[in-house]
Image: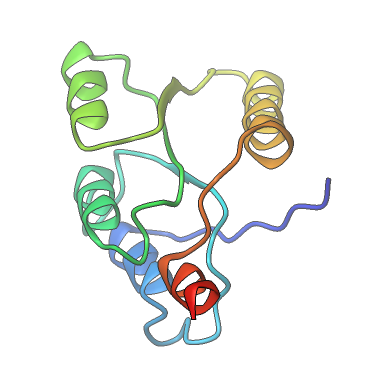
Length: 124
């Protein structure tokens, strides 16, 4: 499986990437988002809420991948339509294993809907 990744520093940059705003005008649509809740400028909760309410991005699987194991964060993330909630392992090797497992599952096993604009084109 070939993967590429984009890392955004903060929540505002993540939304700019999703909405293809400068400097991300030519950014590809993500197949999967690993989202930390503790982002600067705009936290992951706000990014999740906006991404899941926008018809252009709502079908993209979003995995909350964060250090928090708080029940309130888990509950709120699923209420905001996160596709999964994974607590980050503390050790780098564990972190790498979990990321690879998530990418493998969503890249090879799960079926994700096409973007809304692609489906519209197929109906015509």
